[in-house]
Image 1 (cartoon, rainbow over the protein chains, first blue to last red):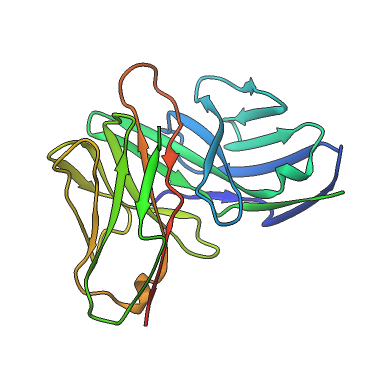
Image 2: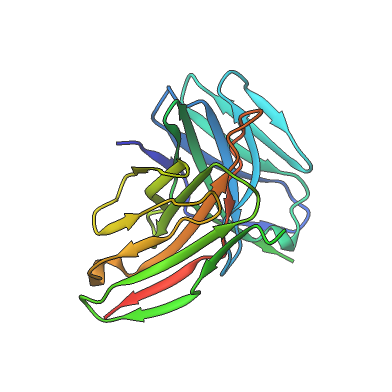
Length: 114
Length: 115
């Protein structure tokens, strides 16, 4: 089966610092790698994705890095804010003629200390 | 747009009872899916559909049925609930036309407890 794992289950950072959340994946055939944010009591929310043929993509305050050599994905959040406190999931997407298969990791809980 | 709407938000069942979790989306998305979320295990795919009349199994389909009679609706049925099905269930949808992205749109979740 698929294996998408996270290096650390919890992460605490000071407000204003940068956060780095890491993820390891096992399937080199995945087409996209994605980060989701889940706030307490809510459904996951898309943050950013990166295609498998890229190694870096930037969004607003977030950067995703993909290292296919070591099958590693990371999410960098710049100037972390209290509103960034949530659980972050990495996911892989495999596309095919029959549909899309997403495989999610177990999540890292980010706590921002004011 | 309401996005993805799930009902009910909370449900308590007794072992052996049946029920249906409802999911509706108003974004004209072809792809719809159901996940369950258990502590320490992330999200696991139960069933998915790429259009009306088409469904397929995900990682953990046993004990669940789905149907897709319309583009908008994708109900998840538990025919005989078991305590192992106690979980939080999420419905998610995605458009398949145009540029491929990893963006799934999730509902707010349905928390199910089976006694």
